[in-house]
Image 1 (cartoon, rainbow, N blue to C red):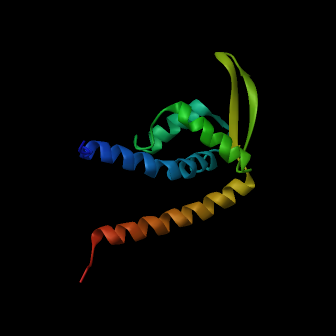
Image 2 (cartoon, rainbow, N blue to C red):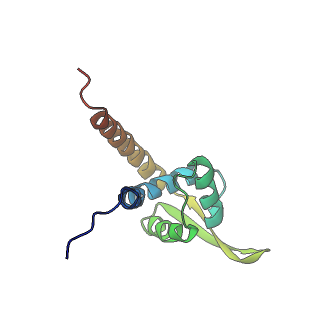
Image 3 (tube, rainbow, N blue to C red):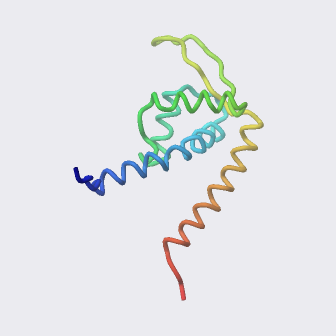
Length: 125
């Protein structure tokens, strides 16, 4: 049986999924570093939608494992508070270590972005 060739759309979805795997943690830290107040998951998801122009929008539930991993690594702290409009909410805030890691990751992101952009532009001479 011959293998079918994936469509451009399918390949794009796969690429976007792989690309977002590494960038979501960076974006989450960026969102939390930019606000003085702790935020809960839904607020973080909405903020990502607003500032990311929809590119980082996705399933809100997919953010929670990333938030837990960042917390487990000591990059975030969290606490739970009761909510008037439903179940208790877990609020997240970036730690000092998280801010240091964010700075390092942002530098790595910029270097990678510039390198890839240079490769995609091709030779200039």
